[in-house]
Image (tube, rainbow, N blue to C red; front, side, top):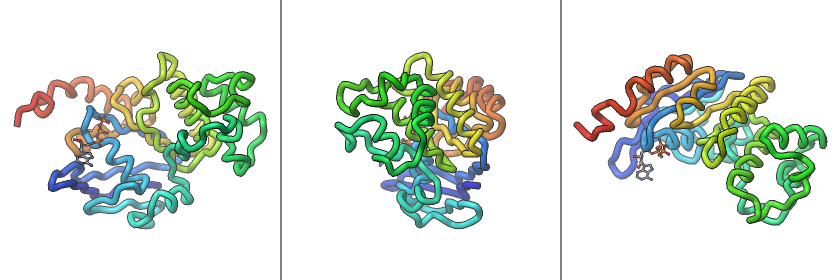
Length: 236
Ligand SMILES: Nc1ncnc2c1ncn2[C@@H]1O[C@H](COP(=O)(O)OP(=O)(O)OP(=O)(O)O)[C@@H](O)[C@H]1O
């Protein structure tokens, strides 16, 4: 179980997150839903270890991991995108997906992962990671890499951005694959239809958790309230 306990985050005297409490259980999927600037990516970066909270704790199975950096957390199975695509220019997609052969997976598994993200194996396995790949193709390759790696906790920041209308189906398939493996997915999004696909959701606004619960209920609340509240209209 991964938890944020009473997390505050301030930058240049500005309170970006306040009293964030979140729990992510094994094998469940979660959305962190909210409008632009709500603090969603800041939550993700704190979970990853890229940012340290100003106060509060990050707990993994009850152990305080607040002081651990990104690499140490990755070793414990908390992962976002695990590679910087730019650094891998010129290697084959197959090599990219298997960390240059370090990740021991069968060819069938590579095929399955590529097909699940909508990239036919025959057309892509041998292709080079280079500038001829579109942004959407790169994104799909990144998702296939996470599928093969299957970290215990996967953080997907706006997984549908840059993808076409098939994104919804792709995300559903991804969620079901991670669930089969008993892995937890934390999905950052401002699209309610994407958030509706996870088991649970946290609605974050102005750096606070406004509502939490079953995704269906949280999405319903978000639809009714977000965009209509005084905060977004710029009133005090
Ligand atoms: N390094 C920084 N310095 C100053 N302000 C920051 C910094 N990082 C984030 N912020 C501010 O904190 C708030 C939350 O940012 P964050 O990126 O977490 O939002 P978000 O919910 O992920 O937004 P989006 O959906 O637009 O990506 C924003 O108002 C942002 O401008």
